[in-house]
Length: 630
Image 1 (tube, rainbow, N blue to C red):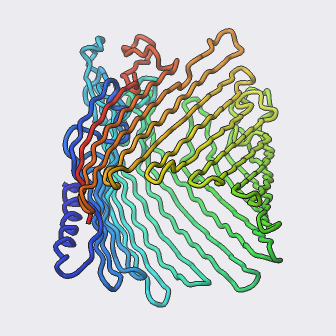
Image 2: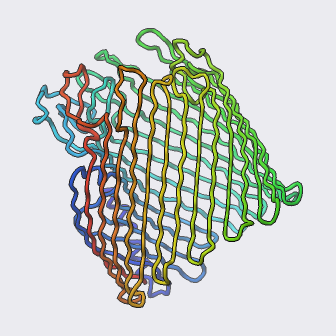
Image 3: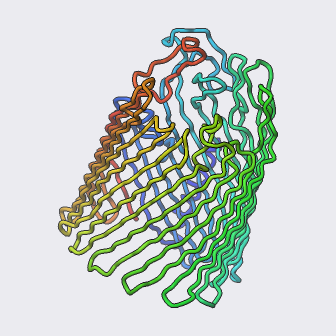
């Protein structure tokens, strides 16, 4: 009902705008309706993972109405009546009033025709049927549907002050895979609602801009826990978030200065029922985390051609949540932190066509309640050069170096050392960025980009040891003739990681390429387009231990997309488009290959329901549409 009311309200407002043409507003925009046919061989859920392509009619609308005096209304509708439909209505008066109403749907299809030996799918209580033959299990779809609607309005007074109000509601429903308190895979309900309200007041002028914002967010999960055979598993808890944020930008008249300050405070509270294996026993957890920060920067020009920037930031996180005691009697310590950052940056114009900039940042992290570390110190240096002196050539090069020193609560090699997280491990990190462009031939543009990143985690005997990444991309555009344009790109990426004390090395190689061509014929009444995109990834893991088998296929995939489209412009207003899209997705991973449904009890308490199984697909989509522009 809410969906219908929201959509009909915006449509009626749009019709009101259209009917008002007799009163004299100017109209701009288009109306497009068409038909579509598709066929998928394979996993239709993966094909439609974040969209809704179906056989039938579809439509898109964009209507802009504007009047003398600066008043305007713009209505936009996409994928009307489908599960990924969206509607926006914004308007106001330029310079004083802005408002927005919207309704947006997002769908996430995960797996179709999953199986489970439980009744009560979609509820907070699953009851086992005792059936051990998967062919007789209940069939269902893993998917999430989200509906979000809301709006905001802003009014700016003539004296520079402004106020803004906004509110939104987001509802999520569906079924998601869940592991619960064991390694079993079973359907958990999604029945969430999130409400958000914010108010802002501020001032805008040439030399000073300042604002103060208050925001409140409420998240409510209708199902706080999931019960399965007397076992209780926790689901996302209800929580409330309150925030206050202040911002200021001041431009005084000395040294070309720009001073920026902002500060914020937030408090998050949650109430969760924790599940444990013992039947009939539960515990309540009250979460309370407060955060606040303040940061500022001063950018100025002390001498000609030199820009300096000083910056600083302080973050504080306090955790006053319930202190829990585990079943073996151990008591946890809540995690809190303080982070301080400061730095200086400089940008100097060497000559008319050459600039160099660089800087230094220092970051100190102080932790309380972490089992692996009391904090860490970062020192970051970077330098960048830009050159435009070569005719028709643009060059940019940047190098940065970070060194991190961690303050560990355990020493390398000790039993607890395996719990150390890589975000506080000692490390040296190097990064290089190179970019070049050539535009020396008329109607031709070429760009080359290269990035290299390496992080060595010193003295880590258990955990992450090294990360290494580089990528290279080459792209260009070429207007072959006045009526023929082309574009292309090719790319390569390599990602390498080493962990578990030199026992595992994982490498990903990713390749990508694309080509498109667009041509106009018949005095530009006919537009033809063809585009092809290809991406492929090859991953593997190698182990030193003879007890672990190397994996030759780690998240391997190949994707092909071919798009063909022809548009005939009947006149300045009417056009007809005929198109076809071919899509292919092949996925292979040694952890998922030869996936089979596992019966409860056959592997201890582990069983599988089919989530994310067999993602391969080959899809064909054809469409015909008519567009009217006005």
